[in-house]
Length: 139
Image (cartoon, rainbow, N blue to C red; front, top):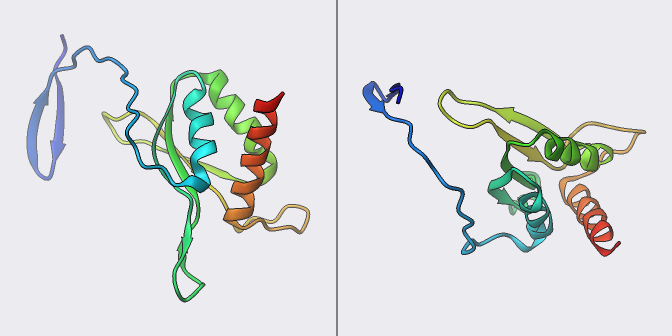
């Protein structure tokens, strides 16, 4: 097996790749407001969610965190499905990559972009996507 070198905080580590197995962990706290999206993503082939938040506002009502989901995706068809589903809600998906790590996608709701002179806040974008997912599941 080839050996890969990794540098962390100035220290040198040698790491040997080894077989791994995907394990579904069921004991996780997920915000109720984003649960449907997380379940939908995890139900797609090759997709695993890593972090999520339904978003919140600080007491000053100006600052806070927009809803988001960070996930990995190893299936092109699943990634296409995700991008197709979210396209009309102006949800941004950013690609994050670090050497030696899987490519991650950060899906953030509530972007300052304007489409047809309508800016969706994060909660509205999340709500609309959740409704669309539930409607597709009901079919």
